[in-house]
Image (cartoon, rainbow, N blue to C red; front, side, top):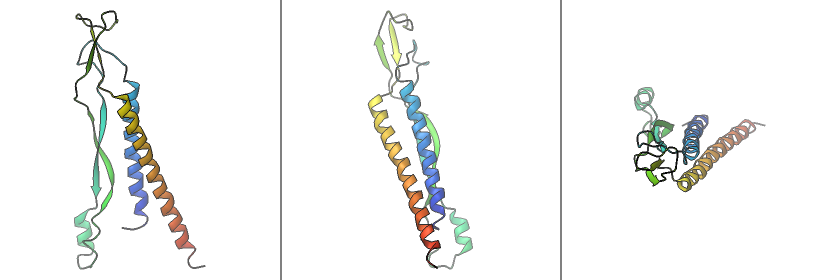
Length: 150
C-alpha cells in the first residue's frame, strides 16, 4: 500500500461518515413528527457500511512471484451499501385532541431515540475528525520525504 492511497481511504471514510451524519440529522429532524397511521409514520434510518477490498486478481497477476504479493490484502476504503429503515415498533400515544389522531384517538410517533442519535452523531463526528487527522499526518509525512534530499 502506498502512502498516496491513504488519501483515498480516508476520503471514503469521510464520505461514509457524511452519509451517516445526514441520516442522523434526518432522524433528529423527524423525531417529533406524527401521523395517524403506522404506514405513513417516519421510521429511523441507518446507513450500512462495507469494506472495499483491493482487487486480488489484479494484484496477483501483476506480481505473483513477489514475496510481498499476498501481504497487501487490506481494505481500500469503506462504502455505504444501503440506508435501511429501522423496523422496531413505533410509539403510539393516546392524544384524542390532536389534529392527526386516528378514529381511536391515537397518533404515531417515529421510532427515533434522540439520545441514541446524539451519541451516534458524536461518534460519526469523531470518526470524520480522525480521518481528517490521518490525511494531515500523511501530508506531513510526504512533505518530510520531499525535504530528505536537502
